[in-house]
Length: 403
Image (tube, rainbow, N blue to C red; front, side, top):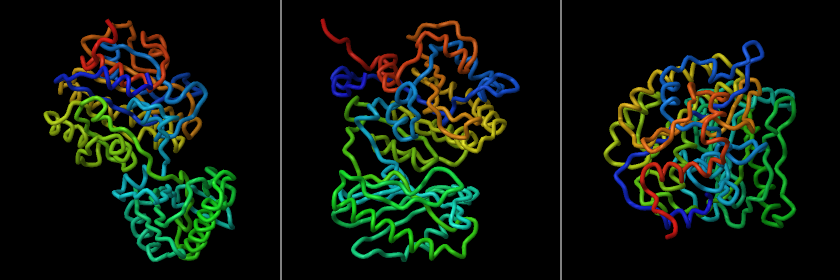
């Protein structure tokens, strides 16, 4: 149900509470020694109990065979067609660090990286600390490119946001991040349909990156940056206006606070741990109807290729699930935005397991929360954009359609 105007017309008021808990990159692939995924390997008595009380299934962020980025995957979970409402990663990074974007601003996501002998040896520069990131951004703050203001701000660990402020810059340019090691950083190029504005933007980006290489030459391991997701601010209808709900974003990572802000969610201040997030959730419980709670580290450990560490992250969340259940949400969903199998050390196209608990859902006999078990659930395999209508219906927030 990607027709948000139609869904908005059916929406109605209710006092019910909805919680969407997203374990980033939750889905995995079977370990060759055990035949079990990270989630199936983890000891998860609390999530398993929830699964037995829920309707279960598997959810595709975009569609079969499509490997999603985190931005479009979350847009889908929030009920937006991610292809129609495409949001560039640069916009999310910029909003996530608190940068305001004007209509002419061009934003990009940045990775600090390690370059030796002209080739990238580590795309994440050893996951430098956020404090080191902030120091490096300050070091780059004085770089200027003729006619354009460049603003770079730390995001978290090795990631930063970069905004170019100047007239006539096109977003129709290529990334400089090859997204693999052993090759040189790419040069930015104009896409053919971008015309003169894209040519100017690409030249400006390359000039800026040449200066960055000079300024960071004496740094280690973060002696260069690569960029991706060049984008300008799009117009997105707000979830609060569409459905008359008060929506809260309980995320610690800047990008996920940004995607929430983009669709009209209000950020809730929280500490860095999942326990802190649950404290913040409880403190905001009376003020909102819909809560998006995001846990990042399942994705990070999957991207590291660390199967056991991802298992440990899942178990950490499971141990605190009773605190979430104790709040008594009318609708509780636990899922991932996409799969990040440790065996692939990156995002993948595999659907994510999902449970939806409410008093109005049918049970389906699923006994555990895992990919194989959820595949037999009554929700089947469905697109993520259909999740919000299910949540609204179970929250008694949708009127009947037709006579």
